[in-house]
Length: 216
Image 1 (cartoon, helix red, strand yellow):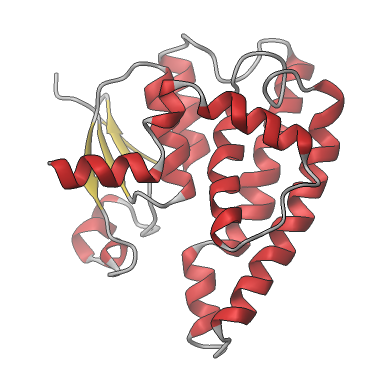
Image 2 (cartoon, one colour):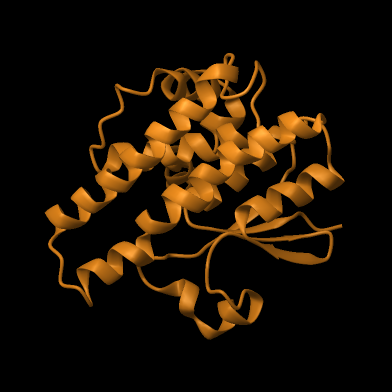
């Protein structure tokens, strides 16, 4: 059976989440780079695979799966060790709420296609685009801090990484790229520190991906 194939962009938050999940579950996979800056995601051949024209896309078990959280859900259902969400229904709902705060409320209005639209069609300068990102990232992270703090352990929920941490770490990476202030979020920073100390997270970092691409 061929290895799973991840259509990936090294700096994409959504791809970053999936890379962490694959690493945590010890799944050996190959990648195809999709350069979002060059518009490769809009290429007809890629759209034939993924009509949304977005990354990631994971080809696994004869399926082509889009949307990072749907991919993580599939991996959890088919390769349950280690689990990315708790078994208890209430705990599961809490972890999903944390993950979705990032994946649905923060990330979509700060991703590359939105920033390109601000720059192009709306003619907003880079300083204005970065201010936009800092504003919405700040609002989202403040809410996430409040939601996570009462039940956090070493990670956002308890003492093992969950789907919430898979979403958090890439979002904080993006926050630093626009110099968003982070000192007000000790729970988030503590969970990030615990997560990034794990090899599965470290190997998924955009810098690690770039370094391996240069070596290859």
